[in-house]
Image 1 (spheres, rainbow, N blue to C red):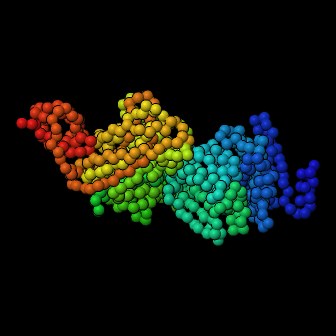
Image 2 (spheres, rainbow, N blue to C red):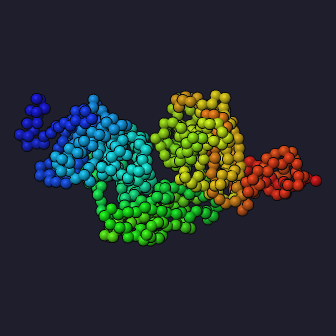
Image 3 (cartoon, helix red, strand yellow):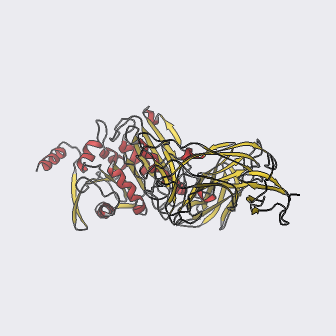
Amino acid sequence: MKHLLISVFLLMAGMVTVNADNITVNGTNRSYNVYAPKNLGENRPLLIFCHGYNQDANWMQNSEFKNDNVSMEAVCDTAKFVVVFPNGIDRAWDTGGNRDINFIKAIIEKMVTQHKIDRNRIYLGGFSMGGMLTYNAINKMANIIAAFVSCSGPAVVTPNASTRPVPILHIQGTADNWGGVQPALNPWIKHNGCPTTDKVVSNYNGFSGAKMHTWGPGNDGVEVKLLELKDKGHWICKEPQVYTGKEIWNFCKNYTLNKTSPNVSITAPKTGAKHLCFAPASGSTFPDITITANADDSNGTVEKVEFYDGTTLLATCTAKPYKAVLTDAKAGKHTLKAVATDNDGEQSTATVEVTLQALNSLTVSSAFTEGGALPAGWTTYDSNERRTGYSNGYSQGCRVLQFTGASRGFNYGLYFRNINGGTHQGWAKYGLADGGTTLNLAPGHYTLKYRICNWNMANFGAVELNIEKATGISIASQTYTPSINIGNTASNSFGTPEQQTFEFDVTEQGAYSIAVYSAASEWSDCIIGQLSLTANSYNDTGIMTVKQAASGKDQYYDLQGRKVTVTNQSAPALRKGIYIKNGKKYYLSPLK
């Protein structure tokens, strides 16, 4: 009765009423507030916005989305769209299942019936727990929601490969779980094929406390945006220059499901791919990069697909397969574009960023900054599952662990394991192509420094490090048995492992990987806490010094990577020449 009197009073005062409604979903009565402007017309957009934990629709609509100058209803009145504020069960949302996904779908159907909503312009957002629900909905509703918005509600969700490129706006204060935002956005930046480097507008809308970060455009022209609010906490921003309701609408209105322009996506290379080359000055060599794309047009035909490196045209394809090759590329960041043009002259653009970097040293472990993720450049295998970076959302298996003990040797480490216990059946490798990074080494002398420990091996397990060619052949190896075991709990304290040094020589230019293998025993494991590679010097042959090999049984490799067991240097099968043992060069010849 009280709510009814308030509504009557607001109506008499000429203000907006709160129109509550109900709907039965899966046998449960659900409620929501809806506002539809006067003279709405047909085929207008719909925004559904979900409240936070322990809040409700009235709070969301009347407290969080109002200030002295503007309200969400005022935005609706100007832009002519319907907004719905649903109520969660017990003031909460099902952020992992389908209960509230079905609720949102039911609301959509009712709004289409009541207000003749345009099905191609339906948008979903939420605050706090409602924002987490929004992330849960992306994989499940991308075919019916044109754009998604999360305010103060980051949630790491792994995109389904079949999910279309999706536009996302995230709004967050830096005093409110700021560290959770980038991990939530990264999978979608990658999935959408957006550039991995953001474009930043400081002093956004003239507000010194706001920055707008934009990744894109990606496939089908979608963008991922982050509105950063300096020192803001867990609330909706209602500053005059940056009013959240307006920001949501200004983002969402750019997207529709029935666009008439062609669809285009780059299928290779991956966005964010890196090609690293250790070489003397002006001697860097980078591989040719093949660019492939898919393109189609729902209301016509694709007339051509043009490929660009920045503004330089690489190729024009008028029929499938859509493909181009970037050759003789120089070091630097390259923005590769595919521009599809249809029979109506409309265009769509897809972009990926590829970095070609010449360097003499690299701290590989600097990418260990996100728990539950596998960093770009890495590939792991535990005898059961192969994972490639960048990927995240892992709570089990090979992944980066964040350590929280009162004292600890490092804050993050890459964990991998060997489930079945076979030889070389548990490993982590840096530099394989499927991990998004290739590692090209010029002939020379190198040093690999590392800090390694065990995770759950009280009796410790030996770790084998190898420098391998792209073919998998090892050119140098070193075995190390850790002296620290963390104890299977991230909150345990542990000391800093002693830094180890592995020196080796490379004799021919080519692609290599750094491979770390856990012991050949069931559930053996390893934590890589620090790993860095330095080129000490370069040489045309990669041979710095040679040594006369000692007599007796020993294991060497020839320069083709084939094992040579030396038991008697006068053996007729042995040819004199240069052989490799643990990355060092030895001169072997039959003894007199």
